[in-house]
Image (tube, rainbow over all chains, first blue to last red; front, side):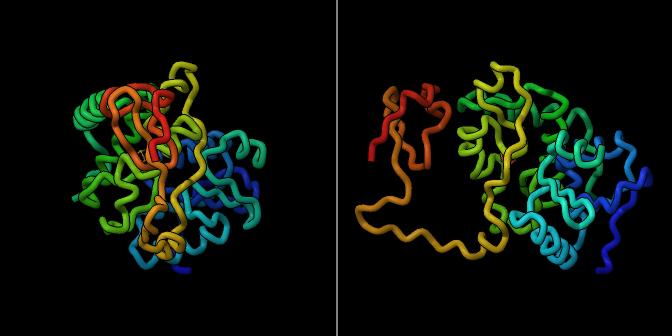
Length: 94
Length: 167
Ligand code: SF4
């Protein structure tokens, strides 16, 4: 995949990937929490991609979250948290 | 050019219209104004980039026919209001949730996946068998075919419990 997510520096808690939309308030809440926790993470605003990349990223997301909804947070390619379930995220990364 | 920030005046103007439309038809915007403004800003940005106000919390492909179900208010709002007391984004809340002073809950996505949306057959109606039940407002006679009656009658604002199954 040639699509490069944006990276935020912080404490290493494993590979954290956030699939988000730039207009989505729940995605924003999730990013705010990750920032507050000072963890290192990658994020991708899928709505900003061109259609081809959008389709391929959506296929990646659907492997973790079949509905393809946002935000989808993937921790270490295994744990998946769908929606701004802030307590769950805190627990997983705390 | 798509603006990345929407002016507060523009947000306020759109918010006012949405609020009065909601009230007129028996719906309620989320009283958490910062949250609601954030969503209205998303609606405005989507209108600018796609030409229609698609849901700020869902991925749009910029093709109106494929996004019809997620143009705000989306096809899923009322079912989510009935089941969770909030639409997927949390722009609309049920009156009971507002009275309880509860924040918008996390609502799971009801919209089918892209794959399932592409599979969806055109509804063929078998005579005598309806794809949806029809509900009737006992106050004003308003009829609607959907999975459950609306929170409030859009015509006379009667509450949900004034509806009966008609067909
Ligand atoms: S989930 Fe809420 S804000 Fe999003 S399109 Fe539906 S009604 Fe509008």
